[in-house]
Length: 232
Image (cartoon, rainbow, N blue to C red):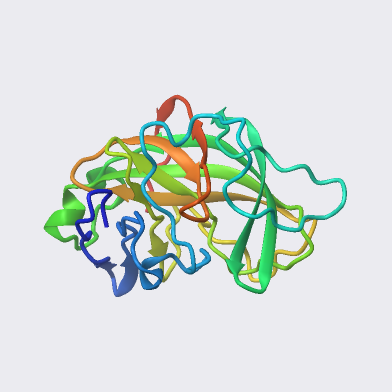
């Protein structure tokens, strides 16, 4: 659902050699809880950021503070970071689970459908999207095993709409993994890569951590590189 309240198109599938790829073109802009991603607290799905929503603020956080281990200091909501900078964040993948992560967005890459998705059967909408790979290093700083959870990052397009990452039913060697391993225990680190298909030939303008509508997002911006690898 876009910020003007118009529902977004439902996610569709890409197929190649019998392998399914769920296209992550679900636009999360204050839709109902059923539309939120599997790693987002569905009681408060994210909304599209306004043009000023990512600006640093000195006001008190608009959402209740989550419990974090002693010695962990969370990055301020609204922080605007550059690629290569780290943020420490807390979120609720579900009501009874709190995750605490160090996230460093290390690289943002733009590719093309022709280059990275050759051989895949695409819908017209998917053919018209702009694909991006977002690489990050993530460390579990909390006390919970976050195994199997998706990386809690979104792409932000030029219309200030959040775009959910694409999920794969099989390996996509050009950019993986987009989720944490089956066991992702406290203290563990992993390099991840998430795929975003920005609809309507859109452009990625930022990477966002925004676990709920009330959360003033933390964003990363920087130089967008050309994709290094040609496999997929």
